[in-house]
Amino acid sequence: MAREDCVDSIEYARRVNAAADLLAVEVSVTEAARVLAARFRVSVRQTHRHVEQAVVQG
Image (tube, rainbow, N blue to C red; front, side, top):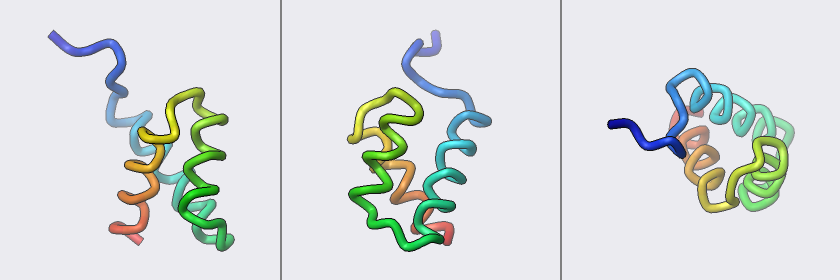
């Protein structure tokens, strides 16, 4: 059974791409996580994972 708080792969990709966009305009990792947390209404801890994935892929 899937957890309700897990996002699907499309949403995950959307968040990682949004993180990559922020990093491309030289927003710090910490600030990118804060912006994404507000935008997607999730925790900063979760969005740090998305930002780190964007760094790895970048």
